[in-house]
Image (tube, rainbow, N blue to C red; front, side, top):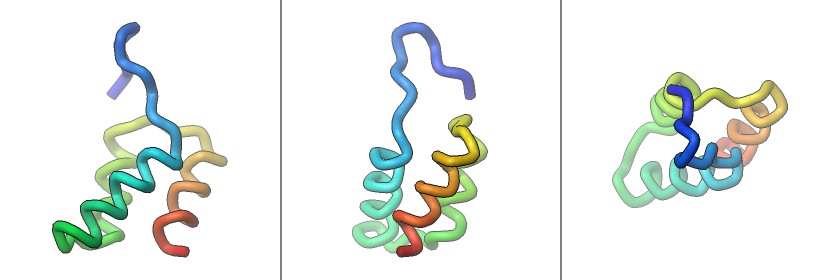
Length: 57
């Protein structure tokens, strides 16, 4: 998904927060949540690594 001019691309930290909310509050699986985010939102390599590290710890 490419962001439109009015839609701001979210940072890895914001995405990690949203993912952790889904994981802990909605009982989502971490690996599936990460995969869904990475398919949906284009992130640089470093941002992908940060997102994964923040979620897995």
